Length: 363
Ligand code: ATP
Image: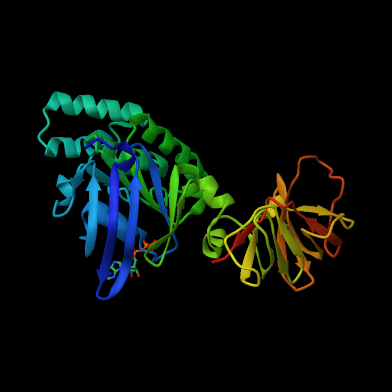
């Protein structure tokens, strides 16, 4: 079979641990060349799903099909995929060169082919001059690249990454994310990664599945998940968000009005819902504008006082206490050294947003 859109098919997969469904009827098609992230908090089942792909766990039911081949019953070492672990699992007593060569030699590849592949991998991860070093003589980021080189040396059809950057500190992690994506794209290998770090998933993945309690809550491109979260859970899990509970007051095909304790939201499109139902409004902090005086119009504005402010250099985050007691986060870019209005603790301010910025959540 040569269906690139369905390179990996996960069909109604369940993993039951003694009555507890760690993975609960999951369906997913992954295209060839995708970098797909399984994202969720601890215990949501993402590692169990990855381990089933690798063959370390057997699905209780369902099928996993890679490039047209059902992987059921195929042991991990026979699967045309490779898993890179969080700990890298490098052999401490072997050099970088020998670590990369290990799997190739074990497969009985002729020496000259082993050498050619190792050299190509060292070039790919730019570690040629470290070939003779042992893992402990490398930085965390370099060790991670050796592990990647070793995982790719056997030219797997699929690369599985288990929290690939968890061992690195924040700054190095951010640099390495880009590096890793560049290498994966250069090789063109299809990739499934597990992470609990939403920024990592957003930066690296072409698509993300947000998982909760063994199920996929939403699957989509990073931007779609950020801008149009499907549920309160996803909105809250991905990035910072203000969630305002309210009631659907007006439900027209081309617009809706939602009444919340602190404001009335006008949204310039229809939703699937019925008037009177409870909904939540999701509003990202960077999409809100602060002004000292009341904006015109009756919708999409709320009055409050500055309760906290945190200066981050390129932006400032304000926490505005609204009438109901809700703390609204507002992020303002510091585009000029001195802004027109510099708000400070205790100031009365108006928060305002446009009718295309909120998301109405019915779940
Ligand atoms: P983390 O990020 O903490 O690794 P996760 O999302 O990867 O979390 P899993 O490791 O997939 O979560 O675990 C999902 C659930 O299944 C958890 O409640 C866990 O306790 C349970 N679980 C995992 N492996 C087993 C096992 N071998 N036997 C019994 N329960 C298990």
